[in-house]
Amino acid sequence: MAKQTFTTGQVLTAAQMTSLQQTAMGGGSTTAKTTSYVLVAADAGTVVQMNSASATTITVNTALFAAGDTVQIQNVGAGVCTVTAGTATVSTSSTLALKQYDAGSLYFNSTSAAIFFAVDAADGMTNPFTTTGDTVYASGGTTPTRLGIGSTGQVLTVASGIPSWATPAGGSSLNYTLLNAGGTALTGATAITISGITSKALNIYVAQGGSVNASTEVTLKPNNENNASLIYYSLTNTTPGAPSSTANCYLAITGNNSLNEMDAQINITSCDTAGRKPLISFGAGNGTNNVSYQVNGTYNGNAITSIVLNSSSGNFDEGTIYVYGGS
Amino acid sequence: MSKPNIRIFDIITNTTIDREMTDEEYAIWSKDSAEAAERCALIKKAEDDKVAAVEKLAALGLTVDDLKSLGL
Image (cartoon, rainbow over all chains, first blue to last red; front, side):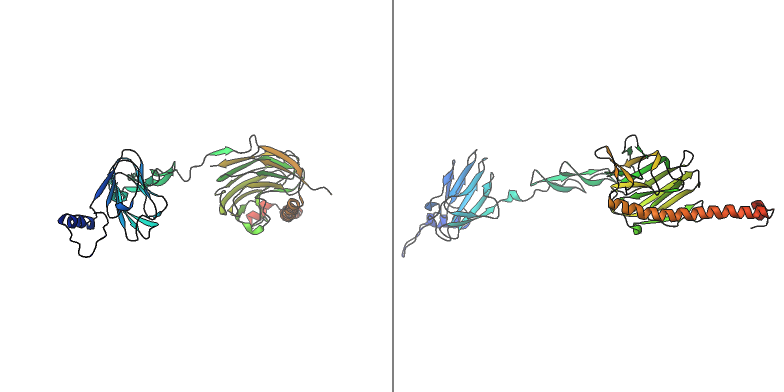
């Protein structure tokens, strides 16, 4: 029943009482609309029901309704009906865009401010589960979508922005590729740096390295960091008197002619993260001192982005360093 | 006084640069080099001591095998 102004002594008819009862139950007088509509004062206390196959609006203007007035709005058409603030304000915690069979109550706090209380059962999530272990995620923004349980051993991952179950990649399987194509010649310099490293692991091979001086120590240093506490070794060697620990990765001693050279291999893992990284190296100098070493230890420092091969005295004069990166 | 040369191969740009060490690089290398010289000297001394000991044995008409026979 539309809002009435009753007067003293007025006698209510049975029809009026029935309509009042319906209004009290949330129903009552209903005005069907098939096109966009602007609310009028006579809509107070009634139901405005939109029925359109295309999109429509119901506009709310000020100075038409009094504080406490309500207008029930329903959309039974396929087109979305949007409750639109005209000159009045319309607030809601839900949506003002009503899909088919959405409804709500427009309650006026004042002549110029209304609140839309949506009664929209369709906004609740429909249970998408069908199988034990199913999970749910949002697809298309807010649409609940079922993700069936994966198989034994699979892990939850993300592919193209949505979750999925996938078999995990092998953690210890690395493929190595040569990072410095053709190797870098050990000539004309006292230090050889390989920079731009981003690999998870390194396999470094020094082939027939030699120096211009008779007794030269060859070492390898990650990141060229000048901090002796960064590296700890346990070390075995074939010659008494060698160091039990060192700030560098000791490889061998080499000499100054083609018969005095050294070969070495160094493996370092966990290179792409800061912290302790397992390190193993084997080195052997052939010639003057015939010193060979096996070094097992850890390099404790930043992620390795470069390595430096140092000759302790004089330039390298022969050999090649090959750096393989594992990923 | 010129500093030692350093060769830098950059994996990302696939380029090689040969140049003199910077002061910072030279300071690090010098420190490492000095420590290496000490280690090399220790190893050389051990080798020299061994040669001298063998020579002393030879002067006494003995060999290393003779000492091994004595369980030394």
